[in-house]
Image (cartoon, rainbow, N blue to C red; front, side, top):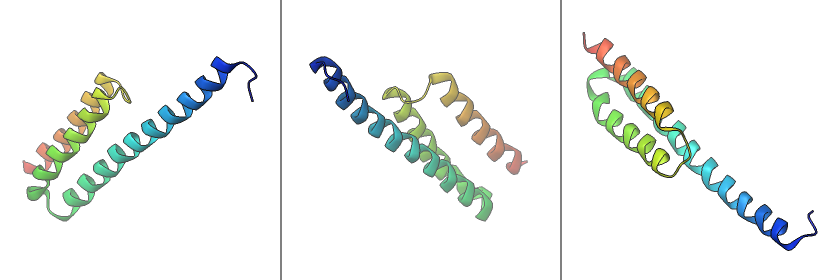
Amino acid sequence: MPNIKSAKKRVKVSLKKNLRNRIVKTGVRTSVKKFQTAFAADPASAQAQLSQTASAIDKAVTKGVIHKNAANRKKARLARQLAKAAV
């Protein structure tokens, strides 16, 4: 445990930010898994779930939890999976 007051504060702040980041990342992973299960059940109706998943990914970007390019890559892979099933 740090002795300096500012270091104590940084520990508290970093713990709070870490908790928030974990919650947001878990939400993104859960949303992706929901898309995968919806896609496995009925690829035609997975489009609605894709938009919810993309929204969750975009929210994570705006909060600074994941990088913009990583988010675009995730969304592109999901959209490509959906488009491949449509063909």
